[in-house]
Every structure is written in C-alpha cells, then in structure tokens.
Length: 130
Image (cartoon, rainbow, N blue to C red):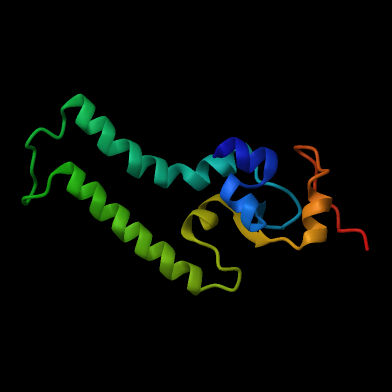
C-alpha cells in the first residue's frame, strides 16, 4: 500500500476508479511517511489482535467480559463510524486518516490520468496541458 501511494499515488483499486491520493496542496503524491501515517491506524487495528493471539496475551484475559480481540473490534468499529462521519462533514470529503497524513483523494479526468502517467516519482504535478 505504502509503495503504491508513493510511487503511483494510488492502490490498484483507486487506479481503476481514476482516483489518486495527493498531498493537501494537490500538487504531488504523498511521501513515504505520509503514506505510512495514512495506513497506520488500519495496520494497528489489524496487527495488534494477531500479535496478542500469537504471544498468548489474549488467553482468557477479560476486562468487564471483553477479550482483547473484542476490544480491538470495538475500536475498529468506532474508528469506522468516525471516518464515515468525517467524510460527510468536510468539503473535500477527507477521512480521518487523510487528516492525519495531510492527504486528499481526488478523482482525475481522462486527460489528467494520461498526463499524470508520465510523471516520475518525486515530481510535482504540473497543470494539465490544454
């Protein structure tokens, strides 16, 4: 995911949909650190339960009848709802992970897609020639 965002500005699904993840100024793809920040919450919510189950830390450890996996499921559910709400509460439809990373997802026209495909990693995006 991180490499796709940095090198191409998208993952395979976003590329098919004509979407790109850009920096907040919308003049370039996001950096490695921004891409990592963008996926860090998802990574944590997916990896933490696996780590706890591998290390045996979740073995019948219950707090108020919740196991650690239940706790992470609850946090993931709350994060999903907050993300969903955030998308509808701002003009650029940015989710919480976009705020954390300083990124924005944009839909490109066909001309912009062709123009952007010639870009080298690290280049700023020039305006589309008319």
